[in-house]
Image 1: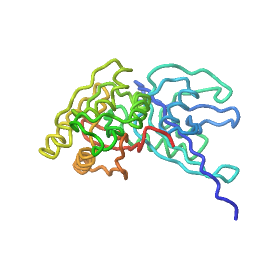
Image 2: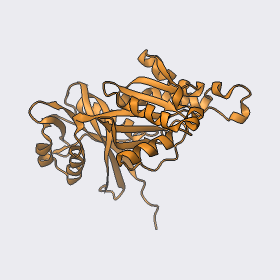
Image 3: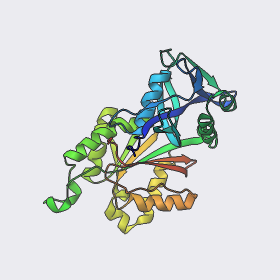
Image 4: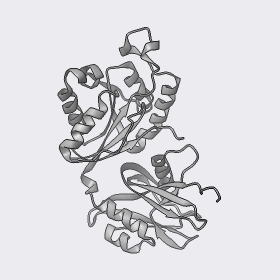
Length: 301
């Protein structure tokens, strides 16, 4: 028997914009190589995580600047070679830019979702569009929750543990978060009042030229003393729908708060090891949780 073929990973999305007549319209691209109409997508580069792949490919194929929303679906099929291929799709809002034809995509059309479902060339794209329309996209907003990056071992730190800083691995994760979180539109930043939490978001704060608001209720010590206060505080931040907020907290806080929130709103959380530097993308409607996506690391493999 030969070796099993390596899975080809790719990312794509449903690019959407508001429409007075249809609520929203979505973009399909025409690829002259295949003479098809499809959702934009493309293969991951080495070391690239799939949300980054999806955003990059949409920008390259459509010319539009995008803001990532919730994960829609991961589609699997086999290539002509027999190799398995898996494509992750996200909802992505067009926030600027415009289409320019290329050798890969020579045309782009904006359609209502029913018209797009009728026009796409592949059943897999139909399924993704059905997943997209299952939620009222214009009523949704995002809250980002980050576990602080690597900060060494507390046993090897002689000072006040609240002041323990990121180590070299943590600084690398923080730099990656600076690139990842803006793809989701992160703009308002919050951190538990621990140096390692603040430092996790510092590169992003510097890039955005904004401050990090300290959240005293979201440290592990505060959570142990009053878990209800931590839960209510995170929900209050999530209810602010005008801007997209990113919150950095600790491993002893995030799982408990998210489990309680998910149970209250009837959402099933994906499996997670809650690793340092990991990211939760929470999709909310009127402050209630409707979906949760998890990114185990901001760094690619």
